[in-house]
Amino acid sequence: MRRKFCRFCSEFAATTIKYSGLPLCKKHFVEYLEKRVFKTVKKYRMIQEGERILLGVSGGKDSIALLHILKDLQKELKFEIIPLFIDLGIQLNKYSQLSGEIARKNCEKLGLDLITVKIKNEYGFSLDDVFSKRLKRPICSVCGLIKRYVLNRKAIELSADKVATGHNLNDEASFILQNFINMDIELLSRLSPIQPTFNKLLIGRIKPLFEIYEDEISLYVTFKNLEYIDIACPYAKEASTLQLKNILIQLENIRSGAILTMVRGFHKKLKPILQNKQKIEEEKELTTCKLCGMPTSTEICSFCRLKSKIIKN
Ligand code: AMP
Ligand code: FES
Ligand code: ZN
Ligand code: ZN
Image (cartoon, protein in one colour):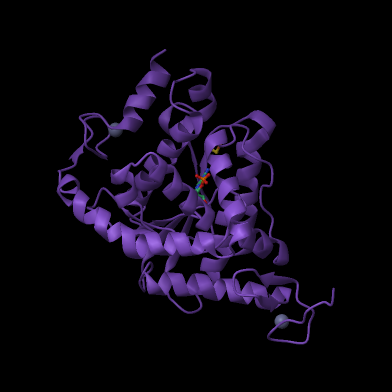
């Protein structure tokens, strides 16, 4: 097969954007992807001039890519990046330790100071402690709860305006599909690439990579030679989430662009309808947790309930 040339220069193309057929060399692919993220940030007004953005850096390819892309965006838009790594205390394969080191190295390269929150030191338990208790709830879901809690709490403590995470298009699509299968209208209506700050205890969240395919992020970190943790978490995501992701990739292989069309269509067309239906529910007041003061709809928040279960025994 004849090799194609990059659309923007005389180099051979290193990849072709599948859903548009655009051939690009490494340099122009990197620029193209960064431009697309900048466009998403601007279109959804994710970041305003002067804001402090707390970025959850896990050491994985998505958040490492986002760290570098946001650093680049600072040339156009003045805002602050506060990178934060949550050390969950996963000892197997030295997973947490290695992830933290990679996150720190990337930050150092960009002249940023990484904040590390060791949950064992701050809250008295690790994810390994949670695992050893064999709770009914899947470990990944507990892990998600811990991460959301810590990111929100730290954002308040550090006076951040928003929390940014590296969730990508495939993450967004599998979440939609999962909740569509369960017909969980409440979760679906709350899903958003930009969740505004609800009150001073519930800091807004943004997902600047939500329109970028996972394999595009893989190419980005490879072409830019970025270091990231490429071993899977030993408590790897539940099989069902991975299976759904594989089904979506099969769909994409049959119909290029299907995932992007589905996610965009969901946010543009379906979500407004769902949100209207959910409005009354959403207006129900949040109170604050009696133990930690964070927002909750129950007397004690789910993080504190989890903590007491793990530490009590
Ligand atoms: P995950 O839920 O593991 O797919 O991660 C989604 C996003 O959450 C990542 O892209 C990061 O922005 C953030 N995140 C995940 N794990 C951590 C961590 N240990 N520390 C800080 N942020 C994290
Ligand atoms: Fe959360 Fe693996 S990082 S379960
Ligand atoms: Zn080129
Ligand atoms: Zn609490």
